[in-house]
Length: 392
Image: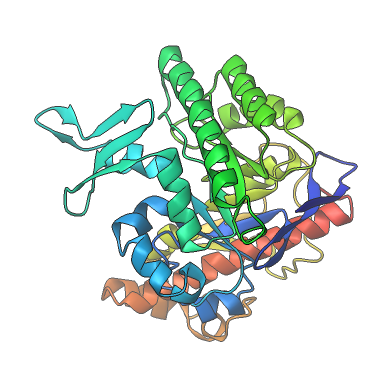
C-alpha cells in the first residue's frame, strides 16, 4: 500500500509510493481540490495535461449536491467527473463545523454535536442532516473513491483545552466506529480489495499532550494513513511548524502522513522537510479566481535544477506573486508565464489577462488557475528531485 523509498540526508523529507485502486502516486504530492466534483474552472482533460496525480473531493458537499446515490448510479465519482486516477475524499467533518457551524438562527448554532454523530442543516436549502461515522464512510464507499477519511471533530483555533480534549476523545471514538464499519463493509472475499484505503485524523490543536494522545490512540487502532488535522485554521505558520516538529517524528514511518488544508508553497516545503508526504489546498484556484498568480523567481526556472533556500522558515524565497488586477499590468505585454508548458500562458499577455479580469470574463480566472495549478504541481516535482539528490 505504501512503500518508503528514500529519506533525505539533509532533512526528514521522504520519497515514497502510495498504491491505490486507480494507480500509484509518488510522494510527496499535492492534491488539487475538486471539492464538489470539479476543480474550479478547470476540466478533467486539462488536469490530465497538467499531470495531476490525484484529486481531492469532499464528502459533505457531494452528499448535499448532487447526492452520493446519483453519483453511484452514474458509475461512481471517477466516471461521473471523467477522472480515472486516484481520488481522496475528506470526511466532511471540517465543512460541517465551518460552513453549517458558522451560521446561526435565533442565536443558536445550526450544528448539534452528539456522541454518535453530528446533526446540521444544509447551507443550500436548510434541510436537516445527521452525519455519523458510519454514514460518512458509506457515502465515500458509494462514491467509489480510493482513499476515505474517518469523520473527525475539527476545532477552530484558538480553542480552550476542554474543547480540544473533547474533540480528541470524540474523534477517537468515531475513528473506532469507522474502522469497525469498514471491516463490516469490506470483510468478505467478494469485496476484498474493493474498498477504499482508510485514513484517520489526528486532532489536538496546539496542545502537545493532546496531539500525542490523539496520535497514540489512533495508532493503536491502525490505519492506512494518518492525517494531521486542525491546523491552518487560525494559528501562525510558526505554531504549525512547532506542532509538526514534535508530532511527525512520532507518526508511523511506514504510513503516509497527510497535512490537511496546507498551504502556501513555503508551508509545503517546510512541512516536507519535517517528513510530511501529502497536501491539499484551495489556494491555487482561489487565488487564481482573484487574479493572483504564482511565478518562480528564477526566470530560467527548471524543476530539475532549482534549489530551495537552505534558510528555514524563509517566506517567498523561491517564488513571487503578482495581482493582475493592478493598473500597471494594463500595458504589460509580456507573457503571463514564458516558462509554462501551457501554450495560452506563453502566448497571452499580462495585459490581456488584466483585461479579462476587468471585464469579469471567466477565461481570466481559468488562465490564472491553470498557471497556479501548474506551479504547484511543478513545485512537487522539484521537491521530489531535490530530495532524491539530497538537496532538500
